[in-house]
Amino acid sequence: MDIQVNDLLQMKKNHPCGENKFLVLRIGADFKLRCVKCGRELMAPRSKIEKSVKKILREG
Image (tube, rainbow, N blue to C red; front, top):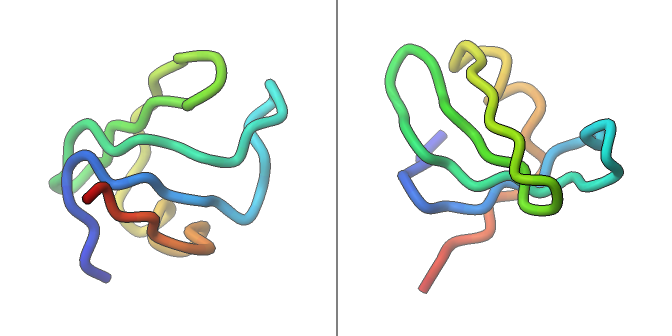
């Protein structure tokens, strides 16, 4: 899966705040994501993120 920094990811499940879109801040073995609605940042393993992505919304 070709995910890059500054991509918007639409996930299969919602964040507890109700939003399902996350901004990619860092990639590697772990991904660092920021919730678009509440601004909470989280880090998760690449395998978990790639399984839960519904759609990649590219910036530009």
